[in-house]
Length: 183
Ligand code: URA
Image (cartoon, rainbow, N blue to C red):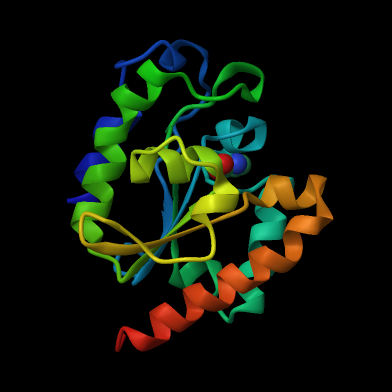
């Protein structure tokens, strides 16, 4: 179950990020939720706290959730990588390969109605493509039979306000899929 998986992650030594981490960041929220948000990797504040999306991008994620009437407690939030890459560099291919089975298992245990990939790294990893985020966003994809939408990472929204309007369209689509799923 989720608890024993979290225990395994906390002791993981599958890649070198285990040497530089303070804490693993397994995921948080309601594991029985119908909606899962998947980010890239922990940043500094997440590494220090062991919780996903607690920094600046996390505060914006809270606002985005609120705008579509979700609370942090009723969704589930996780990342592709469970450990922080030094200086928040992009995850390496070998790190993603080492860590991905953990997220796969989380999603398999949860069987959500819909997954929301936050940013290019999450979308490319889950959809097994090198496509750009602008091409992936705005439509329904499937991850092992589960509906998936991709949208801009909250950190990207902080850097580029032009992404806000399409991100809002994506969030309305996410909410519609969830509402239509007969939750
Ligand atoms: N950015 C991410 O992708 N994930 C986090 O948990 C925090 C910031």
